[in-house]
Amino acid sequence: MMRIRSLLVPVLLAASGLLAAPPPAQADGRATVPLPAVEGPVPSVVGSPGNDYTFFASDLGLPGRGYVEQEYFFGGTANVYDATVAPGIGARPTPSPTASVVSSGHPYKTRMVVRRPAGAAAFNGTVVVEWLNATSQYDVEALWFRTHEFLMRDGYAWVGITAQSAPITNPALGLKAFSPGRYGSLDLTAGGTLTTGDPLSYDVYAQGIRAVRESGVLGNLRGRVATVIAAGVSQSAGRVSVFANAIETRGRPVADAVLLYIGGEKMRTDLRVPVFKVLSETEFATAPSTSANEISSLQPDTRGMRTWSVAGTSHSDWASFAVRYALLRRDQPTASLRDNCARPSRSRIPDRYTLSAAIDHLVRWERRGVAPPTAPRITLAADGLTVLRDGLGNALGGLRLAPFAVPVALDTGVNENPPGGAGLCFLNGTHLPFDRATLDTRYPDRQAYLRPFAGAVLQNLRAGYVLPADAREMLRDARASIAGRGLVCGPLCANVAQFPIQPSTQLLRDHTAFLYLRGGDALLRTLDEATLAVARGQTHVVRQQRHYAEAVRLLERYRADIDRLLRLRRVTAAQAALLDEYAAILIGRLGAA
Image (cartoon, rainbow, N blue to C red):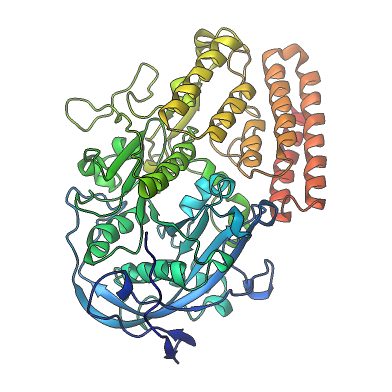
């Protein structure tokens, strides 16, 4: 799509210390979204006094992947629109109409985090601009945490924008609390005059996208951008859906495509950009009163709209939680690393694979007009509200990834708080591994499991629901499964709940795998051997001590390999400390058994 040159000359905004753009013109369109003043990149060294570094600075070895991370502040003046957003995930059966400006000229200053290829030759031309999720009262990079491996593997640039005030101002969790010296000047309330509803957020996000296109925040990638995707997850998907329906329709859109994950209102049929919505089972199964149900917002697939519903997945997934443990301990140490739900939480069905495929399709849709494949919806009962399930409790219908089509567990999008408890367990889903009897009945030998699994992976790949690299990863993980081996896999072995609740070799494997460490395949093989040793010890009790001793030996090897990767700078000190601590816990438990 045609790009435009900046038409606005920044002027000094003394109060913020930034060069700020003048108030927006009255005409609409991309050219009249102000180009904000940009400051940066702001120096960032993790561990600096006063936390003078980027909040949630990535610990995923970006330099080794040919990526750089930089943080920028940007600001100027923004409009207040009369657009509204529904609570929770923003589901609403009626699309927002085009918004009108209520007032203009409100000063603001916020930030964006840029993760991009260091070399222009590695850039694929697409920037995913994520509206950072504000539900936790601090910025959550919900899309990045799910898709980081895909984005870096395929040469995308990712930008996260702080568009809402709570992650800045929350007295315990916000950016100002994290680093007053670094983030103390940020403000999305126009100096305290707009403190509810984040009315500046839509214009701030639009200006941030324009800065991505034109200000130089992409460094040597400037001028090479072909596609910008506006993206949001859950609560921020609700905001991005309103942005697309109500703000982008005022003129030429600043974004070329829209990605809504696990949230968002019904979309207009007259939008000029393609929209892809990906939903988990939770958005079908949770009660409408939770403000996390999307059934009323469902709409047909069209030339410009696509919706996938991924059966067995949960709104709050496992991979994006596990991958941030070390970050949480570093930057949000009061955050819990476990759920307190009525049932073991967080589906293990890898929704990140379908999300990656959706982004890949969205780019080709926008650039070449190649529409993504459709997918069946999760099956509802005659009442239009109840998810139909099989005899094991798993949902019928929907996009069925291989680990769900050939199941080894109950994986659903539903859960609840324990009696007397509080929290968001209704978002967390359930994962409960089948017992040995169920597994042995379904998969009496290894081929009874691996053959249908491989067939399901091939179906997923041919249908366009996963990408080849992720198909290979599913096959690798299936080969590591205990299904079809006739083994017991209980505590210290099973992938269930979270490590602080029930330590196990399989959970340690997940914490390792989700980091995609260079040299990490050897670590996974060691943990797979350790899992088999523990399972054999629990199956053949008379030889348990010998099998557990073998598991301990393998875990000690794992610890030594983690230390070696630390010396090679392929794992951060915080990651190494977490993984080593978890391995030591398992060694202690196995030794005491």
